[in-house]
Image (cartoon, rainbow, N blue to C red):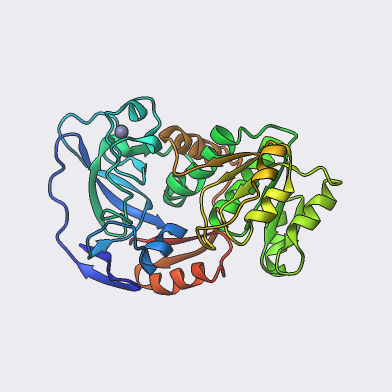
Amino acid sequence: MRALQLSANRKLELTNIAAPGKPAPGEVTVKIKAVALNHIDVWGWRGMAFAKRKMPLIIGAEAAGEVTALGEGVSSVLPGQLVAVYGAKTCGLCAACRAGQDNLCTYVGGVYGFHLDGFACEAVNIPARLLVPAPPGVDAIGAAVAPITFGTVEHMLFDNAKLQPGETILVHAGGSGIGSAAIQLAKKTGCTVITTIGSDDKKPKAAALGADHIINYRKDRFEGVVRKLTKKAGVDVVFEHVGVDTWAGSMLCLKRGGRLVTCGSTSGISTQMNLMQLFQQQLKIFGSFGCRMENMANAMQKIAQGLVHPVIDTVAPFNAIGEALQRMEERNVFGKIILEIA
Ligand SMILES: [Zn+2]
């Protein structure tokens, strides 16, 4: 079968490797239909010093596909069913996994496509417990953006920040995959949504997703605009994933007792923080990574009901991956880039 393998930093190759054999007990063979790219793919492609991994590595952390074969004892999915695939190899046995909080697994084996072989290939064998069936009305692309894009945002907004109707939220980088999901989910919750974008041509697209106020962060200091929009009160919640470039401004945007939730740091990982501001303003900071299986199911339900939709920048074939990662690195995208595994 064909697979997209990383053989060295910034070196991706379309290779031919052996297809997976019969699924082991408890496992399922999934024919991959679509892979959604995320910033973790950019990190992996550039090379990350602390990531333990063996090259060559099949990339692709977020995917959906069709069940084609069942291993012994599997009854949770059926052949022919469209499924979204959880992005990490969790143990299924520890207290966190048994409580449905796979992203807190004590014995996690790694993130697929980053530490372990991922999903940018024609088929994989994977434990059945890591699959979430797509409801009717959700296609392969809708299912492919459930595990990391929509799942992560569901977990950030509702499990961690506990976003409430009527609140005001600042969503950074509204043109990114998770930013475009966060705008929609916050708007459907009944919130006022302020978002940042990096170029004026993204403005109508962000407005169409439901953003009430859109700030071009390259033209205006977003923290100044947010304070003005909220009459100096600040926002209830900041949705962070940019990191170094926006951290100090994000903290300034929060109202007293406000919540900041972050799942990424695309502009770098170390920053300074004003601790006096943290405790005097009684700010709450939530680190968020991945999601619970239930977040994936909830996201797909909302997609099926037409409440939210995946925002697609490009659907590209396998061999366009290099260019796609480059564009993500340059932030020259609006929404998701999907690789189709035809
Ligand atoms: Zn576990």
